[in-house]
Amino acid sequence: MDWDVVGQRSETVRRANLSAIVRELHLRGPLSRSELVARTGLTRSAIRVLLGELVAADLVSEDRRAHLGTPGRPSPLVHANPTTAVVLALDIAVDSCAVALVGFGGEVLALQRVDRPRGHLSVADTIADLVQLAGPVLAPTRGSDALIAVGISVAGIIRRPDGLVRMAPNLGWRDVALANQLGGALGVQVPISVANEADLGALAELRRGSAVGLDDVLYLSGEVGVGGGLIVGGRPLTGAAGYGGEVGHFPIRPDGAPCHCGSVGCWETEIGERALLRQAGYDQGGGRDQVDALLADAATGSPSALAALAAVGRWLGIGLAGLVNILNPQIVVLGGLFHRIHPFVAATIETELDRLALEASRALVRIVPSMLAEDAPLLGAAEMAFDALLSDPAGYLGRFEPLAAAGGV
Image (cartoon, rainbow, N blue to C red):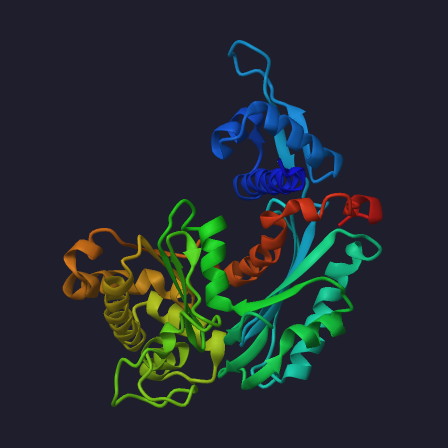
C-alpha cells in the first residue's frame, strides 16, 4: 500500500470536512454539535475532533445551551468568532463609496458610506476617497493577522481573474488595474478580489438577504446604470471571464436612446435613473436628490411622477418577462433604484409578467425588493473575500490573533 497516497487522501478529506463545518457556521450562525452532524453528514466523533482544531485556532468557540425542559445534557453551541478572521469590503458606486470590516460569521464590525459628487469619479480620486474612508476601519487590524482578504464591488464590467475593470461606462473608466492599485494604496498584503456590483449583490442576497435557501436567483440593480447578478443551481453564473449578467445592456429597443456603453436602445436607457427622471421632467443629472424629490411627489399623487414610474415599471416588466422565460428563476430581487421604486411599480411589473412570461415559469417566480438595500454589493464583496477561508480553512489555522488582542474593533 502506498502510504503517501493514503495520507494525501486523508488530508484532502480532513480539509473538505473542515470546510463543511466552517461554511455552515459562517452562513447559518451558531449551531449545536448535533446540528452540525445533521447539516454536514459527518460523524459525532469527526465533528468533535475538527471542532477541537477550530477552537484551538480561536476561529470558533463553544458554550453550553441552557436547558429547554428536555432530558439529557445540553449540546454545546458552536459560534463563529467574528474578530479572529475579518475582511475589508469596498463598494464603488457612481454616487457613493463605502467600506466595511466584516467578521467571520458575517457580522459587520464597522461600516462607512459617503456620498460623492458625480464629477469626482477619476480613478485617482476614487482610490484617495477609499483610502481615507478605510483608514479608521482598518486601524484595528494593524499588527494583527486577522485581516485575510479584501473584496471590491464596482459598477462596471470586471475581468475576474486579475481584477481589471475592463469598462465602467458610468464611472468613465476603461482598463483599470484596480486590484493592484488599491492594494498598494491601502498598504495591505492580502488577496484582493474585484467583481461587478450586481454579481456581488446577488451573492449577498443569496447568503444574507431575500434569496436565502434558494438556488436560482436573478438580482437586478439600478442607479445610473443597470446590472444583473445571476445564481443558477446555487452557483454564480458569471461567464467565461466574469462579464456575464450585463442585462442592462440587453438591446431592447433598436430605435431607442444612445447608451453610455456606446450602443443604442439598451434596457438601461428605458429603466435607469436617467430614463425615470427624463420622463418625469426632472434634471437627469440630479442623481439621488432628484429621485428623492420624484418619489416624494409621487407619494402625494403627482401625475407626472406617477406616469414616469408607470413607464419605467412597464419596461421593467417587459425585460423581466424575457429574463424569466430564459432563466426560470425562483426569485427576482430588486436592488438599488428598483428597491426604492418598488412600491410604485410592483403592480405594473406583475401585470407585464402575467401578460408576457411563459405560464409555467411565471407561476414559479416571485418579484421582491432587496432586504439589504444599498449595502447588498458591499456585503457581497465581503462574502467574496471570505470564499478562500470557507473553501480551505485548514490553510489559515495557526495564523490568527483576534482583533481584541490587537486593540479591539
